[in-house]
Length: 104
Length: 414
Image 1 (cartoon, rainbow over the protein chains, first blue to last red):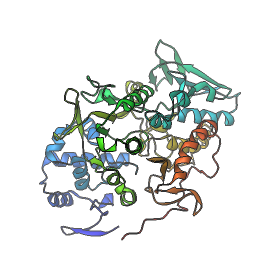
Image 2: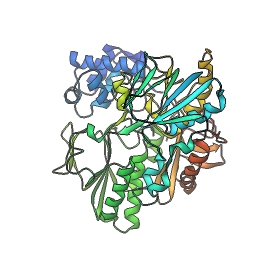
Image 3: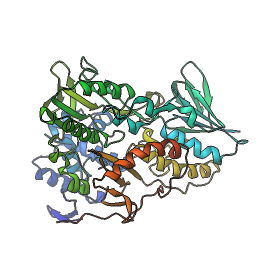
Image 4: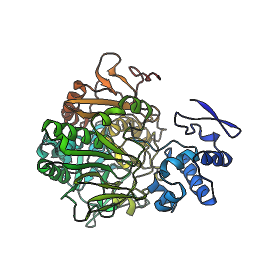
């Protein structure tokens, strides 16, 4: 896996720039990742990211938008406001998790 | 006398009781299977019904025929599980006590979960094909279809048999070409993911399959509702996809009794250990196949490999010993690509589908992640294997539960 420098930190990423090592993530790093895709993190963003990180740790999978909305109680529309256009992918990118995938 | 109660007489449940009845002494163990009906559907065959290649009668058989002697079949609707009391309540009031419970009631399409889907166009221009009724109705609609916009659509992941919508698109495209009407059909594939193929090797090797077939991909489409009056799909970010014929894969959910029992996640899947399938909440409940929340593919193939591991583990667990078997997420599946060809995928929790040959390195006879006629014949031959080898729980030669890297290779990066 390639290594890249984000801010002052070296991290492992896949070919699309998603972090591949769960433990290399931090909230500071998240701010940099968010800035890369034009998002300035607020508490509302961080609430989503913390849920994603916790849920991934337990489930071994990046949660779907539906799961974030039903389990964390954050409506899908709000996720589209916070992470415009492609919320599932953007949330995973900033949270340092794999993007949602199918089996192939 | 101990009692093993299995909820669901489908692919997973049937394999489990066949494997365990042989290995659990009849003087010590009673085994019961509950299901709401006596119709076992060969689900991979549903894909071929809309194209008139299979008739419903070819893919449905009585469940009881595949349950061994010494297993009682109880038809009934499950009301709920009382895990604290160790009881299952059926509609009508019957109670079944258990020492060990296996939840194998699968997952089902839920068109009711998307606003508008069951509106005026359901089974008129909006169809599913994961149910007998849906597949049959779609066969009639496809026979009438004279051109226009055909949209293949996924509401959300996870779904069972995740490649089936892609196969449907390929088969439909090939059919329209064969009928000389391809230029009258606009085909599109609408997915909540960022593409039709999402894993690196598959994207690199197969990414052009949709382009070549002039199937438009509408990625990152998070469906909010179906506007039945205007015949359009509407996403949360207000994109619209119009259709004349919508072939949809509705949201998939586990059975509602799991929610009523307080045993499910937000999609009614039972949280279970991804290696042992043991419930994370109860030490005498397992969940196998599509019913479990494992980060594996929901497919008969996964259930098959899980059942192999589970049977050995169950004997250990019931004897008070630690379980030594670990399911690795292994699944393989044939993917129909049209024109009498298909692909084969083989993967697990950690390894994406890779190219190569299967099951014997270099010899195959099947080619991984590459189109071939042999893969297509493999898929058709599998129907016989399913009824005669897989469901009875007999070992399939050359098909071990654990995924093997032999014969696989990483595509070169150029």
